[in-house]
Image (tube, one colour):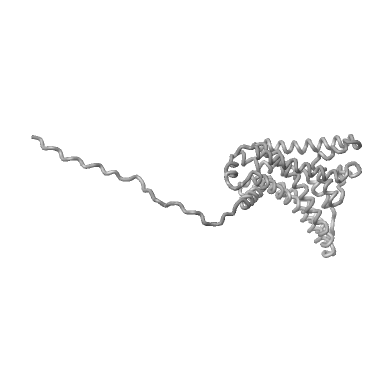
Length: 303
């Protein structure tokens, strides 16, 4: 008779992992709120306008254009230092006019960088899920673009001012004279920066594709400038003379001249044909309309 098999032992199952109960801790630190979010977005957008925080290729265009904007002022300062006297190659009035192509290219290249990437990578949902309102987003982006443009315009003018003072025989007397020009330097740069930033963002905010936005901004500057130039030459009298206000740079130069004085020889601004108050009124209306266009875009945009 075959003996019965011993009963089998139950198989021991070794656990595959361990669960640790770490719980959740409440955040007891400071809650910075909505203002801190706007400031953080403004700072990151300003850095993005110059390619800071990204690879070397992202810095080539903004810093290259900034170098081009600085070059004439550095040449003027260098010539004055070599000749040991002040040489008026550029003035505070015509400097930005002569370099308007550089600033238009900066807007066309960097405005899509500020707003297009957020749409392309679909991060607006993340932004708007926090304390950031859509109006806050628009304000931060516009402020960052205005600041970036203001820097590449004002820094060369301030460099020119410093060089003029240092190249004078009587430095203290020259310093007093040049400091009187400082409000015009700051105001001129700010007027240009606000209008160009509003134009660039109004176009760039409507498409996530960088190539389309850049092409659209360049086309806008070219079309408005060409139409204003052609019609202005053909009709200097009658209602058509106001068409010169279509040119962004002529418009802002008229406001600059009305506010701070000084004349740019190459500018089509003529207060005998179009008064300075008309330039100011159209400038304010255009900036308000472009700002409303950007705000409306983000109010309607699905995050």
